[in-house]
Length: 115
Length: 112
Image 1 (cartoon, each protein chain N blue to C red):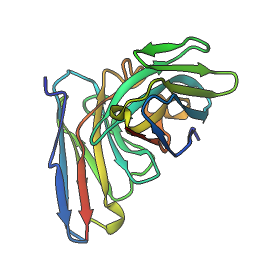
Image 2 (cartoon, rainbow over the protein chains, first blue to last red):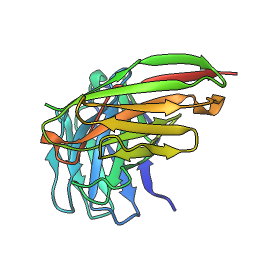
Image 3 (cartoon, each protein chain N blue to C red):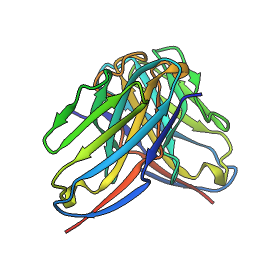
Image 4 (cartoon, rainbow over the protein chains, first blue to last red):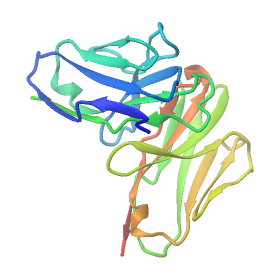
């Protein structure tokens, strides 16, 4: 029972480099999300996908892009990494957007450092 | 804009103590309020509250919602060192329609 799987778990980037964070869920959930977590700020929504084929901006989308590749997979791309993007990134999924019955299921996170 | 504020931001207690964590919110159209426990990695779901005055309980943890005064509390009785974690409150509803808006979290440390 894998739930939500994120890769990689750790990454160090140089300013200006690009990378993609991968996320896959095996619970047949329709909705998927990307959050970032910074000290003292809780989790902030970057992008979300209500269902396969749709994506929308969250609270802090600047500097990121996403792709909902299929129902299972939702990737987050940093085109030109900046030190301000140093954070822990969490992917999450839920049955549907409007009714998070039982709450979201989170992946184990990616700790990203941009130097 | 939806807003979730948790207090205190950090708390240090000894095993056996009872703690109360607070979560206040502002939202246009309330759907639900959720509590999560975050240890080293991913947040794990504790409770979802949708109705005022109905206590949700799981072992030593309990939570209640007051929709009139716009807050929720999470109680932990007879704390154990394993309760040490960040406790997150999250709001679903209003302008964010089902997407969760999180508070800053409360860091709870339980000493033996």
